Length: 322
Image 1: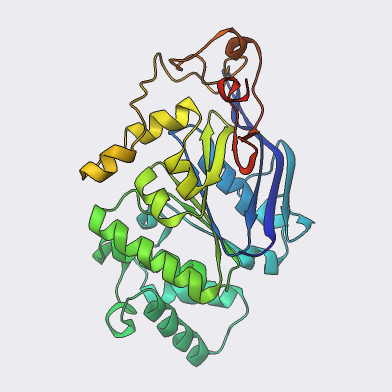
Image 2: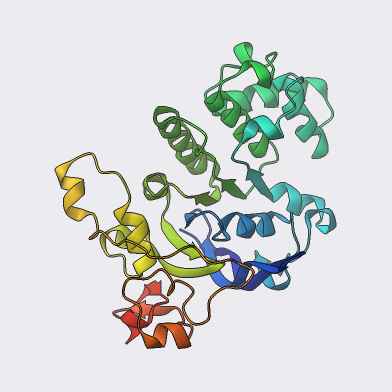
């Protein structure tokens, strides 16, 4: 792993609605190291996708900073210089919605290559051929096919090829495997890891699927209602989850063997309903669902603190800090 390529500092994103402000991301701080995969996990509404969209410039932050290679890039992509837009790419959950169904695969990728200044027809075709090869799609079979005629795994591979076409350094992967069957998920994860190693890429991998997160992430940040509640190296987090919310997520993962069952955390069942991001609870935001709640959880918001002095494993929970 290299130095920090991305720093997110006290980042907030609020959306105005007729019912009030939705606090989608509400003051998160984290870093991403060059060459690593940082997993962002949590239930729907946790703020993980909004965080990724802020990084690529789809939204401007309400407050806070996004620092990329030492420069503040806390503004939308249309205000970012061309080389920065090329360096930070995104792959969405549903490639069918982001790929023109009536265009040939060749033309979809060619349009991206033209945006980075490649005009020569033969160079474009050569690059497309190499990109399709890199994602395990034979060029002679796929150049003149259309997205509407392809399966989910093939579509996602094309979306990855398109993202790679600008020679990015950082790719936000927003639920890239959630719409795929288990076998295809494994193929895409294997592909992503191979491409990452070959091109020395950095990933932010957003998912609600903890099993996938475990296999691809070097570190994992767990989000709940716009906050990071726990973060650690992937192996450490799965062996030693500390936050009750993390335990709840992990204890719901299906196990396939007795060995997996032995290391799975004790079953933690949440109580109550998920609160609204318009009016999140005071104190610890998880306290309305936590089976271990006490008075301090209701009155005071916990801060991220090291677990047993381990600065690489941090958790926001009064039960741990006390």
